[in-house]
Image 1 (tube, helix red, strand yellow):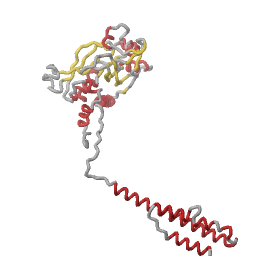
Image 2: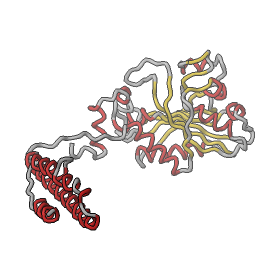
Image 3: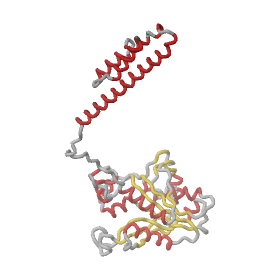
Image 4: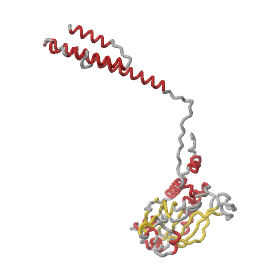
Length: 351
């Protein structure tokens, strides 16, 4: 009797139709619940004769397995149906305008610095960095600027601790540190880009924070000819093959002789215009032969070693190259200014 009832229940389970979550829950309670039909048959197990228990148990397991499979299948069907209905309601209207995202660009100063770094790396130079919070020893004294030297007045500084620690006023301390730690006194060929700080009133051409890229070469028999050849290569690569340079005598405590370097005007080609103030040339950097006191202070024998150094201001190069009239534009994070460089790099597509 129980066997026939179980067979009939199996057919009932297999033929059961479920189309909603409510029907699924009813099926679960009716057949798999604690008081459901399968649990009721399981309670009969104790009354089944010993020789029929195995067959009865197998049929009971078959009932439970079929009920669970049918329940799982129905749940998937209902869930899939709900998903399809949801997708149909949430269809994207492709006629609506898309959301535009502004794309960033390399900052003009970063672009100039990377361009200069790549140029010097191709010439065999090392790119070296150093601390922005510096010792007076390296920022001034090892660069032939002892305490009380009048040239310190032009580098009014942000001191942090008893005139011993300050925010560096130039990247030259990196050069002094490299020479100082070069115990073997082997030749040096390096540039040191980075931020520098001086107490200054910010205006269109001055900033209390600015960037520098200084270069240093130290070896035997280094002369002005090597300096001139290096600077000519820099200028041609940065401003064009047709550019020429000229030197003017100047004064820097850490070089002797010291030379200001001008480049032929890239607006008028040297004929004279408002950009170059009628001179045909524009000042771009300072340079010179490393002073013997600097070499001596960093452990080099100035009778054996010589060298040259130069300093470039990325802001000045960017202002000349891109026609920027106010240095403060580099630091105000004004998107109206920076968008000019999206267009320049061809990154304005899709805006």
